[in-house]
Amino acid sequence: MAHFPGYRCSLCGAEYAPNEVQYICPKHGDMGNLDIVLDYAAINRLTSPESISASRDFSLWRYLPLLPIHPDTLTTLRGPNPSYSVNPFFSAGWTPLYRADRLAASLGLNASRVFVKDDGRNPTASFKDRASAIVVARAREIGAEVIAAASTGNAGAALAGMSAAVGHKAVIFAPQTAPPAKVAQLLMFGAKVLLVNGNYDVAFELCLQASKEFGWYCRNTGYNPFTREGKKTAAFEICEQLTITNYQLPITNWQAPDRIFVSVGDGNIISGIHKGLQELLALGWIAKMPKLMGVQAERSAACANAWRDGTETITPAPGDTLASGIAVSLPRDGVRAVRAVRETAGQYIVVSDEEILQAMPALARDAAVFAESAGAASYAGLVKAVRAGTVAPDESVVLVNTGNGLKDVANAMQAAGEATRIEPTLAAVRQAIHAG
Ligand SMILES: *Cc1c(COP(=O)(O)O)cnc(C)c1O
Ligand SMILES: [Zn+2]
Image (cartoon, rainbow, N blue to C red; front, side, top):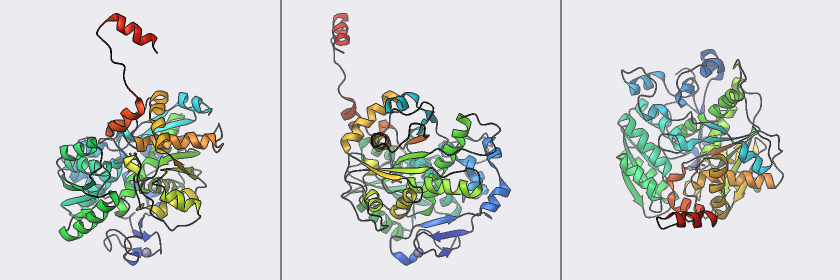
């Protein structure tokens, strides 16, 4: 399509036509993530913030003119029924942006300034649906029959779900330590599930090799340039929804918050959000770049370490944390994830597993959002940043919840504590209530 001229390597700047390469720049081994280049002048001729804000398509597909997917591809996937949400593939994204006044108050921040973007509300209950929807569309475009992905659980569940929605075949490689709820999801959607004896990084390598061997289209996060295109739609939504929330009518421009807090594993979400914001700036649809605040777990902090050391050389971390969604040794979008924070004058914040466990019930009680551990990590990061005096009370803050709490019940039970067990008598109820 006219507005997708090709790719540019994030390391050496080499440019490629849309069909010249498929995954990464051939010059740097397994590194060299490709940026998808779009023609912003062409996009501005095609659409505007007003026309998108008037759309009745309440999914990420409302941003189709800003995506490297041909409209005809969606028409074929949608089939003869012209309505918008014909299946879950067409309802990925457009998750709620909640105003969290009580959460703001508990942190000493001003009311109406703290928001939670709840991506646990996606069709398969994580942020990964955004990336998987775009990759499935791309697979259809290039005629790929089987899509494979390595995953800590959510990316695989999202690919399996989006594939089931449009009748595609998926093969998922996950570590054997993946939480049972996520494995159950993979199996339910009918994907071929391979639980690898090794961690996520081992599963990632195996998926690359197997995809080459068997000719599968590989969705691996960061490695496939289209995952980031899906993830950038969260930035579009945040800015569009902030405008609606603040009743700025007519909608001629969208509004950017001051800071966005997001947890970081491979770094593809933060890198995608950064790209989305850069595009809105380039289009002239927002007026400023928010500070991106990356949150990593203590022993899974390769991006945070590189940022702290002022380098773009990513050194693998041990990669273990109870937050399975961000348990990554070598982040596959590490360089762009470090840049996302550095170029927006944001920060990386490192949190302990203990702090993540405390964040889960706090977020659920003060904002009514039940996040999985990796999603609540962003809140743990906000708490730390506020305590350090980094966030001023009147700043507008968006916290991204990347996954639903039911994805990982074991950690949720550990964080929430025990329920009170009683005999079926009023006396027992009275005693239990008075005990607090
Ligand atoms: C994948 C994931 C993340 C991290 O995203 P990256 O792109 O790997 O940085 C955070 N939270 C949850 C719940 C995830 O599934
Ligand atoms: Zn290159």
